[in-house]
Image (cartoon, rainbow, N blue to C red; front, side):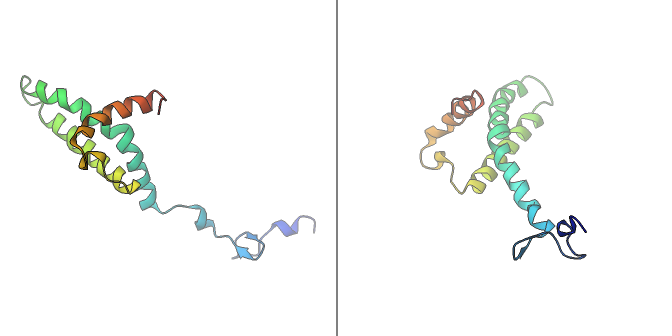
Length: 116
């Protein structure tokens, strides 16, 4: 029958030469996907969360009941940062020099504008 070579036998996945390809091979481990997304979120979401939380801490002194928002933003932002650095396998630069705490926001702004 024409084209019958394209059909894999029942119970056998598609094959490439002598290696049998499993449909599961194309599906990444969910834990790796979550960590990869957290690494990206650390850069894209974590830094702005931390930066926005700082003026909100000041505003929380004047607006009753506002303090949980900046605290949550600050903690989540830092958590995303550390997960991202763990996934990269590199420690944050501010572990070596505290002045790098001020570089993160500048780096993020350059990254978002396409200069990095």
